[in-house]
Length: 168
Image (cartoon, rainbow, N blue to C red):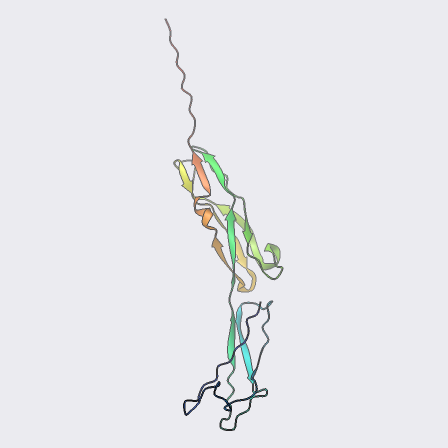
């Protein structure tokens, strides 16, 4: 949602403030072309005197800025297991955090992928599975890894057979 636009009034004399009775009356009108569907960038907040009035002060209206920052998209890897000595299969997961009824197809380009640095030679333990492959359209999103991705792959021990034989 769009934040409320607020004004700052400075330059008063004689210990007066905008709250001092009789110093100011009326309100400033603030407008911007930005809305909840606006892309990431900086927008002008236009200041207009509206009904603002004062006996002792004139008004110098200065436009402000509203900055729309990127929303976060989170790569969520699907937990996977592998056995020591086999190549881990990890290309599964989702991406969450879209806003304004957007989805992966409408807000990003590229192919969603999940990878690991673990190989068939990696020892028993936990390994990261990281998402990637996407670029945000218009810079509207920043990508992060879910905390659980750091240990999403578990490599387990490989069972081996031990058999005995004896000849008499």
